[in-house]
Length: 413
Ligand code: RNT
Ligand code: ZN
View (cartoon, rainbow, N blue to C red):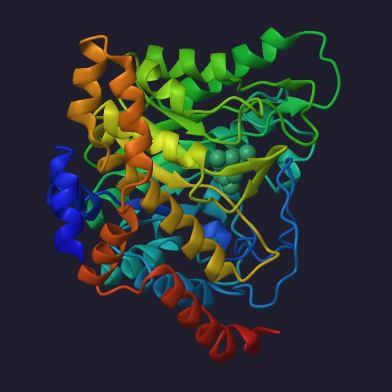
């Protein structure tokens, strides 16, 4: 069957084997925070703040680093290809001690680095500028309070150094993504001084030059959040400008724009001006709700643009969703596989023929090719990719997840 399918793709000028090679060499960065509802292991109440909200109470949430690692290792067996782990600073191993965010060190993350070494995967990192008393009034790097600003600057500086060590030890640069919740529920009087302070704080965070082979800096914008409906300091324009000026990577989160505004169309423009892109593949339903990513139009459009712009070498694909209303291993697996399937679909697009039609002004052929492409048996290629990687098909993965639920997760009541 696969051979037949390969032939029909060849008729459209598509090299299936080449698509599979790209699939095998395109990691997705798995966000650790799907496993425990963005709680982390600082040992406090773990209460989520700063506009982040997880709904649901499905049993089986990881309660310790061991459990989270066990879950991530399980998810990795269910994903074809080689991936990465995206860790937040609150997931360090603090050994029961109260280590505040401005005190974190590499040693608190060495266990995670070793885990990733064992798994043969790279790592990415994030300072956690939320769920902390110093973020309670909604301002961190842009706070008018010098002490609070300095606290978060120190946290972000340390995060970059930790990430660089991760990148060094694992032989693959870690992306450090800075997102801050800063904003206001109600109408500000002076937007600009918050933005000036955010800019200055970021400048101090990024002042030390780090080896790009070890660390890559990214900044993430947002339209609004719960509690920051009227004003978000780190808006799209703010970070677009910041990333351009300072040549950092720009993070585009699929849920961080107006509900009908996709990030796919931004990729070809943004890449003209910033060196690299970080994606937070997510799914907003009516708002930035961080639903599990699906094989839907939005996700397909994002991957299409990455392929059409030949942007994969300059793009870091990460995920950002958290759903506690279903089995968390299933959430991770469904979302990551949906992103991968979307990428495969994009790689199987009859690009040469589409472009030729477009260049010659033959838009009828272009339209027909889009329709022809939709009916192509891409899922046969997906199943082949899974088989070659010794991973189950989607449906087979579900029974593995069910077994893991009864053997492991259900004991975590
Ligand atoms: C929040 C941002 C941010 C976080 C994670 C936990 O709106 O999307 O990326 O979701 O860092
Ligand atoms: Zn995000």
